[in-house]
Image (cartoon, rainbow, N blue to C red; front, top):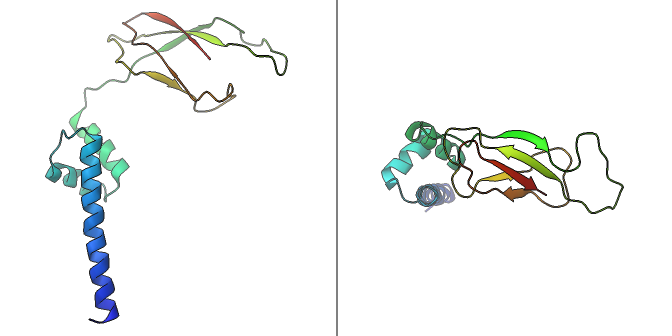
Length: 139
């Protein structure tokens, strides 16, 4: 076998293996709700990009899924414009409300995405709030 044919065969096998791995990973991420052919459909439609395929699946298969609704109500501690001296330990608390018509599912969290970060906290778990329920979140 010449080098070009051998490389072509190896890349072909690698592509098949990679796609099989992507299908298996797609299935695992969905909790095995979709058969391998369905997973391959969404992956192929998304040019075998796993993240895009997962997004496409949820766009097409779960149009009625709503993200939890929330409103910031007020600062409970350390209000707007107040300062804390450097190297002073403190707890920052905000009051939030579930403003949606549905209870929040278990596992809802608030995640740091930008701005001033308080220590090394990237995420705060919030209890499952009922509609209109108010809760204080502290970091």
